[in-house]
Length: 181
Figure: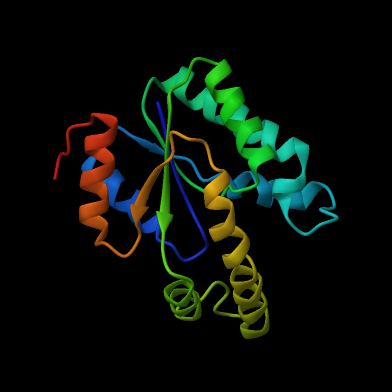
């Protein structure tokens, strides 16, 4: 199975997946951003967003399928994915491969997201780049929040202001996994 944790930048996706991983040790963590970073080293990304690359979407789905098939373990995926076409493409490929996808979306008010983004350092050795990344993340808040209404109907919406432990309890109960911690 795949547990996809979605939400705007700063919503707590990685924090929730970290909490899930400590309590669900057999689960693998797969961050599709890594696929994007590799592709950026190989090809130009004209829009600046590697999700716009068809190859990124194919590789994300193919690697997720491979992880589930090869290792027979649940896979936790912390990744913002809100373009309805891209969601359909990736989730469709996973479902076509016979893999159950449990999709969670962390809802967080915009002002909280801004505060969280401002409190993070993405590239500590390069303050200018750090600020550039913050601006990009903040610019994506509104589109991410607006896209929530277009997500698949089986998406489980979570209150991203709850403690990670509470959110992990909800996710584990929803997917039928027994917590270990």
